[in-house]
Image 1 (tube, one colour):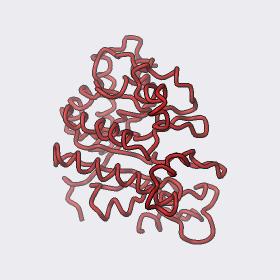
Image 2 (cartoon, rainbow, N blue to C red):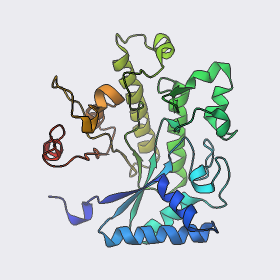
Image 3 (cartoon, rainbow, N blue to C red):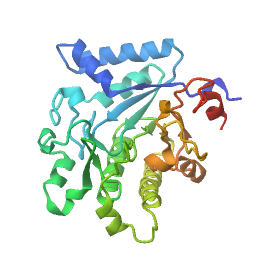
Image 4 (cartoon, one colour):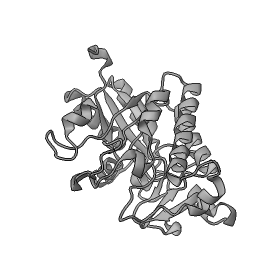
Length: 302
């Protein structure tokens, strides 16, 4: 059994929570943000939590002063607009002052949800700059009405790694956390539009699925090495979709849309764990005990 001191009891503070802050306070500045976040941390503590996982890059943007990514509209109301304070700096100091660990949560590939309009992005957004240049246009791809960084591109990996690097270097975070957004969740057999990239970079791979998994593996390994190299005590963890792989012939029930990490999101979570590229794995097992397709108990034990 784990000692009480080693228990990891974390809760997420997502981009919706910055929206809630903006809705609550007309005057948005360092002191009102500190007040808001202090309440959140104290509430978490009262419920027995010891770690808060804060969204710092939901849409290829930043909740901190970044060299690479524009300020997030979730904090300032407009992408690229400086909120006038550094949320991550405030959040790390408030968390630690209250005896709570804090991890910075990034979505690696997501650029924009529900829009493929590049002019809505800040002019300093790397996705917009890349799109405007013919040579780098395919670094960002549109899929199902949203924009994503193309995991096949070395420049994309470099950007994501640099983004994690600056957080670990400049902020006293206890971890870097990634959730379940790797290759986008597929819908109705519509394939992610990366044929051109596969043709160009897929040499040595007989099928596209293995190549896609390899693209993500390379990123995860590089992130692990980078974080370890700067501050070895900073954890790197992932909370993937709750099902690794359904190898039975019958697809999973409608409640899970038959999705799996390995074959649909190209996230080979077991490999990452085996290789020691991640320090922890928190699968999002969001189904009840006794669920026909995805029984909570079975999944947790597995």
